[in-house]
Image (cartoon, rainbow, N blue to C red; front, side, top):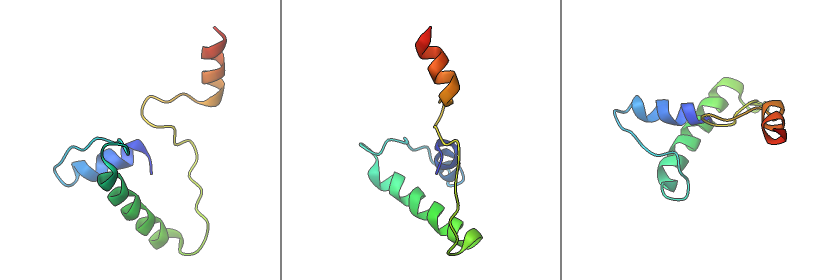
Length: 70
């Protein structure tokens, strides 16, 4: 589940929730469960890989390394 999936889940329900597991674990778990159910509907028992889920404003590995070197 990405940050954007989390936000969209709550926007569709007319709410705004913080994507912070430490202070909002039940809301995060609810979206994780919904996401897992949806992926199961799509892929069944097959493995489904999601790549590039860094979160809002995240940097890719190359960008991060270049940023750290400057």
